[in-house]
Length: 239
Ligand code: 6PG
Image 1 (cartoon, protein in one colour):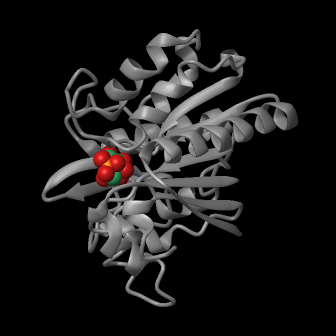
Image 2 (image 1 turned 90 degrees about the vertical axis):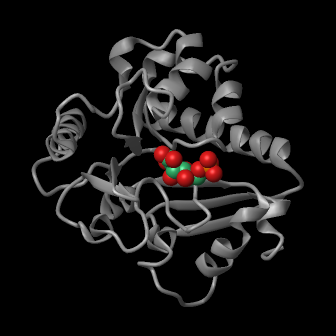
């Protein structure tokens, strides 16, 4: 694993830097493998990045978009990560509908939908049961409690190692989330973290040792590149 940590002066510079790196990773994947597989983060931090990506002139037919986690709500719900990304980005570009792979939330049972998405990923990447696909790029955020994707502190999802997607739990609310082994099988993971309220969790994440069940983002050690892109208000403790 190669690790890169950058502290940018403010959110706009963080977005600008993220856009440069994401653009480079997408272009490299397309040159090297003919397509790019990208998994999105939810939450608010990536919104300006997704808005900026809507102005890019990529060969969109060569880009496949997935989600690394999803709130267990319908796709038109205001909390939906899928809704957010479609509105600020995917609806604005000529990406084929079949290249957009949202996490299903239509079954009554989130475990069923987690298994459905696992099967969809296995089929798309042509991997057999027990094998983990390799994403070109996974975007992640981090909560002020040190969670990432929907891997929340002290939850069962943190220890799932035998499947691609599992059910996360935020204060009793179900979520769908990539598992740690799937996230760590990525060629590149980029964390975008902004805001003073993230400082204390970041200090725990970057400490030489610490409790991974309390700070799940510590578990993310991808086989490829790991980028931490922080704004000054979040990353002051590191710079
Ligand atoms: C989600 C995200 C989650 C998010 C963090 C940070 O579904 O909410 O995937 O992991 O990245 O909670 O959220 P903010 O960017 O809004 O601080």
